[in-house]
Amino acid sequence: MLISNTITSHQNQENNMLSNRVQDALNEQIKMEGSSSNFYLSMAVWAEENGYAGVSQFLYKHSDEERFHMLKLVKYINERDGKVIIPAFDQPKSSFESVKQLFEELYKHEVSVTQSIGELVGICLEEKDFTTQNFLQWYVSEQLEEEALAKTVLDKIKLMADDKSAWYHFDRDIAGLTATSIADTGGAQ
Ligand code: FEO
Image 1 (cartoon, protein in one colour):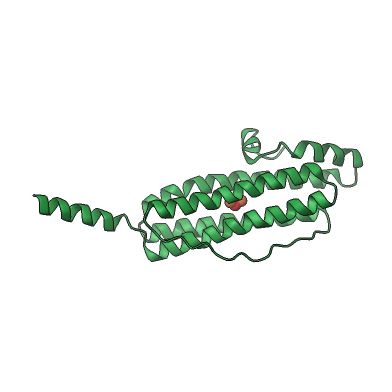
Image 2: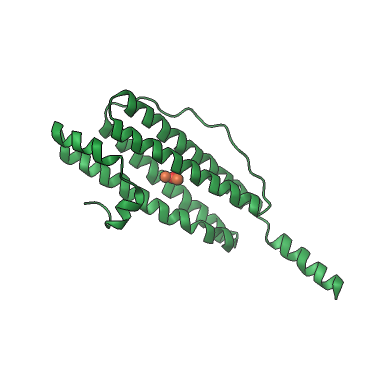
């Protein structure tokens, strides 16, 4: 009895381990989230240098959120007794033609993150790792909100064009904008 319990427990432990393929893909996502955090940080610095206080506040805050996304993956791999690799990050872009161009790049970036999460979920399904697949649903929802947020901001920017007063209000209001507040209002307005 004792031996059979030991064997079952050992098997469970083995079954609970991440496959190499899932572990590698999770580590790749750690790199992506960490790179996102640095990208947002770099955009925040540019916005601050160019006098967009509200935009920079929004971006600094978002940089922290991306770091949280990275840490959540780190903790998850550790919980599953996997091996976390903290990677070297490429230097993010540091100069932009305009706030509009910055948000165009930001939106494109979020679309690529969504794609990467989708591929990761696909790998989990192929590997029959339903625990990780379930864990990743949080990222799937988060990406939906982040894309909606980026799209909303971009739409506002397009509407404002060169209206200086609209830009003043935009820079004041964006500081309080978050992915959750956009999701609560049902997306772009
Ligand atoms: Fe965590 Fe916006 O990607």
